[in-house]
Length: 419
Ligand code: HGY
Ligand code: MN
Ligand code: MN
Image (cartoon, rainbow, N blue to C red):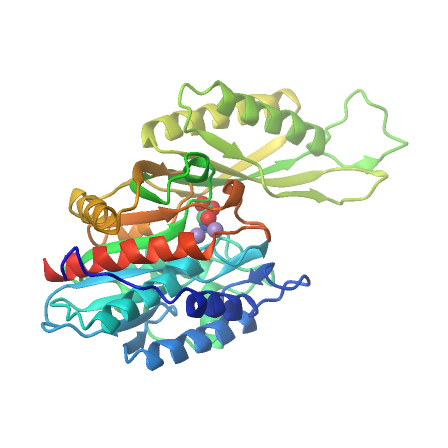
């Protein structure tokens, strides 16, 4: 396809599909607020809807043992490693309608716009809906892409439990996904290239009035669970000296975590305590146990790890001084990912052909591409989101911004499918 070929993205169709998808939600607020937890009824209904769209586009579909859904536009030489695109459609509670879905439905529209031009790909082009990018149900992100990269095996998935105490396999079987996990691992010659379209989930592109971001690297995420155990008791009857209050220990430790992140020499280092559970959780009872999570990231893996060990040291010293027992569980501690120059060059060429300004940038959010980078050469295309807001119902990207992203994705896929 020449760089002169003009591509007309069907914006209204794409927006209507995104809106329909947003209505598959358990959120008590109406769309654009969305809650769509993996393997929930809403998630399964959304998958069915997507399947109907893939079939309308004449794509060949298959679903693997954890629900990763592949929709393939067969190229002239289907035996060659294919070109992959896609993202996730699960959504954390009370979030927005564009995180992930832009990469799935935008990937589908990119294929359809190429079909409308009469373009014929040499390599097949596949749009992927990846299971459980969000950590909401099982506490770890990117489950489906970790499985495809061979980073999560059968036994490890058995250890993942949801809030009902059901393990991943019980839940996936109940949702209708069976088969062994090893069968879902992608060989390194399955894809020739992988590119994901996603909203930036940050303010940079909008503040610079740039329509496209070319992602050069994805930050390395780590998540930890800290459990502190003290001695509970009557809020009135136990005097202050000698208390072993788990909540006060947690408060001091959480402050220390924030201070370590602020003091880090790396501007890309971020730390968040997003979940805190207090036991017994009564107004007049001294907390005997507190469990909280730490989400820790940096584009530089070493800097992230240095901060992680400094946090572990602080947790130990504060807990010991307060005579509190502590346990630190590392849920995940993943390496960062670097984009393939082959793909960033194809995206840059696509931006130029589309006459769209762009900048190279890092992704501070993690994405399935963090693990798809272990399967194939990886790249990501960012489009702006209003005020950089994401993981909130007011998450928004405009039809024009969507269209720009899909056009650049379509040109990139066309180039890669002919290489
Ligand atoms: O948390 C993340 O970075 C991703 O949006 N799940
Ligand atoms: Mn997200
Ligand atoms: Mn996402």
